[in-house]
Image 1 (tube, rainbow, N blue to C red):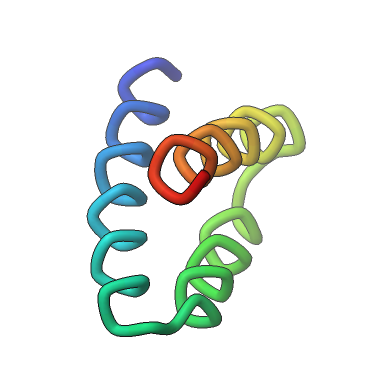
Image 2 (cartoon, rainbow, N blue to C red; image 1 turned 180 degrees about the horizontal axis):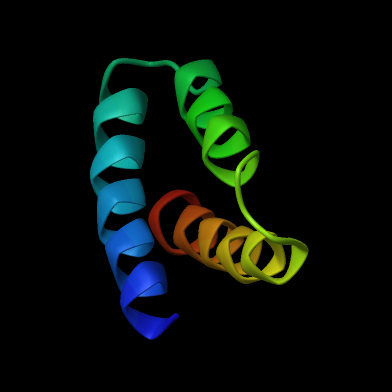
Length: 60
């Protein structure tokens, strides 16, 4: 699970930087919704925490 979280965080950071440099956030939120649609509940909670952490770190 750790590598899944690390991969997710790295991809999410890149996506956040790209989306916000373009002035949009909606595609990033859609990416997150699509990603967690195929995961188990515990994985969703884990990745949701990572998603919120990255948003706080990069956006404030």
